[in-house]
Amino acid sequence: MLKISSRKSNKLVHHFNIDTSGTHTCQVYAGHGSLSVLPERIRLYNQKKVLLLIDENVDELYGQRITEMLVSEGFVPAVHKIPPGETSKSAGKWLEAVDFCFDNGVNRKTPLVAIGGGVTGDLAGYVAASVMRGIPLVQVPTTLLAMVDSSLGGKTGINHPSGKNLIGAFYQPDTIISDIVFLETLPAREWRCGMAEIIKYGAIADPELFALAARFKSGYSEPAKLTELIIRCAGIKAAIVTEDEKEAGKRAWLNFGHTFAHALESLTDYRRFSHGEAVYIGMVAALKLSNLAGASLDESPLFQFLDGYKLKVLDLKPRIPDLVAKMFLDKKSLNNTVRVVLLNSYGQPRIDDITDLSLLEKSWDFALETCN
Ligand SMILES: NC(=O)c1ccc[n+]([C@@H]2O[C@H](COP(=O)([O-])OP(=O)(O)OC[C@H]3O[C@@H](n4cnc5c(N)ncnc54)[C@H](O)[C@@H]3O)[C@@H](O)[C@H]2O)c1
Image 1 (tube, rainbow, N blue to C red):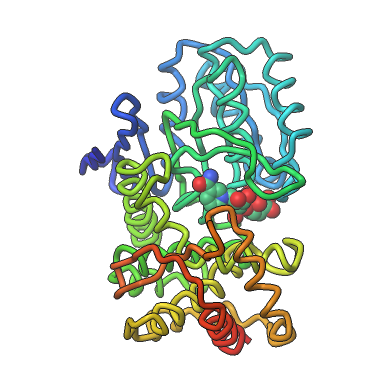
Image 2: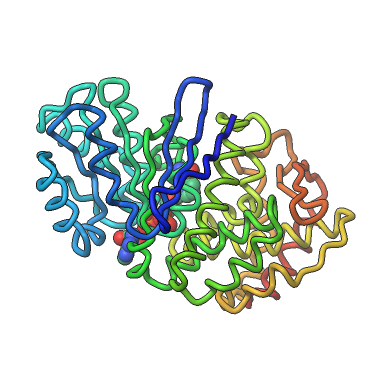
């Protein structure tokens, strides 16, 4: 059961618990300055040594301040930098990080702190899951996407040449600290990436989120409101993964737009679109498909964010058959059908298995025309 306590450590730091598997509780802190709870959280393990896996760009901007804070609290931090980019989610980088843990005398209680976006979080999470079959994990997400999505829910892993996220484990962090101070330096494109996942939560679970999210179309502002937005999104994901940790049912709703997005990313070799850009285009296609399948959804809640995702995509129209073919290869699609998340209405998702190619083609056509 998800329990969200209304306790606030101070006006700008909010706190709630996520209880998964009946046995594990993850403490989530979010807000301006919430990183200050890191020492008290890792003190629980009674260890001086702390392993930090940190994104290289984040290290450049914040690494020294973080290690100084830990040293002043009596800890001995050891730092391993993760080069930015998806290529770091590799077996080679995983092994380097595992070596780093053993080189620094890791034991079963040594905390590992992941500081960065989803790439660092996914890699570090898998390192924590696999070293000695599991060492304590603290996630410090520094991108909007990681704060509202990837740091929550325990999916960790790396890529394989055969595909994305094919090697991994479910492994829950003990603590997630989403300090929005990090977001002040987030590049605009990464901001839009996180916004796409926030828009997704509006579509599948909480249509009132659209209005709150619209305040942040152009980037960081209003810390208290931004914290509210992050908490609400994190709460949605937490509630879903609490009920369905291993994706046997509801967790699949989080894939709204993603079956389309994965096809687009794969067709363009993961180079042309950021994940969030592909997800937004995918959600436009999924909205169209929902309407073709009988819903009558107003497009404006989704389209109010369109300006950030006009991406000159008309050249892809001749490739629509290839995009559809890619959807059939998606690991969630079975038996010559494409598994997609559709909306009956905003906040009312459902899973559907599509066999009619022409519906998928029309949805792609609409999305490419719209997002051009
Ligand atoms: N585990 C899950 O449930 C889950 C869910 C969604 C996505 N993901 C994964 O997340 C990854 C994408 O994560 P992401 O979008 O956070 O990207 P990312 O980790 O690649 O970070 C994006 C960029 O932002 C930079 N950056 C990070 N924080 C910054 C800051 N505060 N200031 C300035 N620059 C900063 C990084 O150096 C990087 O260049 C993908 O690998 C995806 O598969 C996982």
